[in-house]
Length: 507
Figure 1: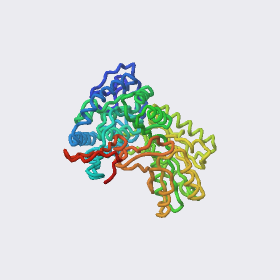
Figure 2: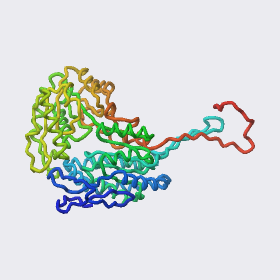
Figure 3: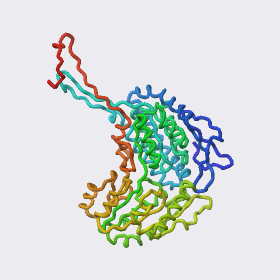
Figure 4: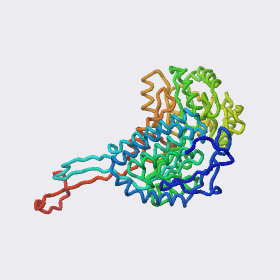
């Protein structure tokens, strides 16, 4: 797949990827994809729906028996091939991410490498799928467990991590022996298409990994399809709640990992230079379009007064430019619609009485047609404000002031979202107390984006997650498999013993 920006006069049309084949799409059944740094249309993406989902499910259903029954070592070898190809094409994937999303090339490359971590985990599938065997649980009775795949499964993924988030899902499902339909964001399709092609090149059998583009109609079709057995979704809370409620109503296993409003708690003894670096990197990296970004600082005591000038000093040095430009710290917003949404949020915060210390709306981008926006810093934000309560998903950072550790902890625990959090302190006792007392599943200590490594689980709580199991890691293995418990006795012929109606025991 070519990765360079194309001429708008000859815009290519992407296709769905079903049964290891690109499905032809009429141009009128597509929508535009923009390069956010230039505002130009670079490709057109299909608007799939019921028909395309039906075709993908049929392909995945037909491929499932052979994929399920493939020897584990043979399946593992395909993953090793796929891992090698993903690494070989890491820069191609990163360029496609930057082209479609706008994040800087180094940030995009880091995303690809974090995604490959989960493929590394999947390569060890013979170990992850092994069961337990307990002999003699009763007289001549043995018990064992099996982990078996569910069947046809689906992944619905967001625009902001077109490699990392999908690779947190589909390799886990495929590893377990399921077949997969990926419904990615239509805003960032290039890297998705290349991943599907690389899976086929690695030896992935046709029908095991299918890609269907589209919006609400495609999501609805996947959620309601009787042959889709499990779904993992990453995106907004509103859609994630729908996927969870409607999917589970139909007997599917569903995990929805949704919106966030992550806060860092800063104690007076913290290394303030480290805190300032963390605040700027977390709040403005990838234009704030990260679900794990710490976009609020809860500063205890007079810490905020000391931190503000340090943060302002760092903001003044940020380079906002095309993500492919060397030295760029932040690229554009991924779409003009989302840019306008962020601008509205800045206006809401200003109207609510928060102190607007830095106004990103005044920034003039390097390309007038690009979707650029400067960074925004609010101070004296309070829990009563909407900009405190809701996820903005843009380069908007808020400072909240608390008198004590207890007050700051209560703010974090009282928020409706619970995805990630962090504490900044040099006091080990305070950090230990925070780990035990904070009601958030992913915790950072003196680091701002506590995303666990790819072989560990990822989740949220409250309105940040719907479902029982986290994604990835051993929890991901449990999500994508059904455990069967086998209890068996093999009596020797002629030595069965007398008939007994007594409930079988352990003697």
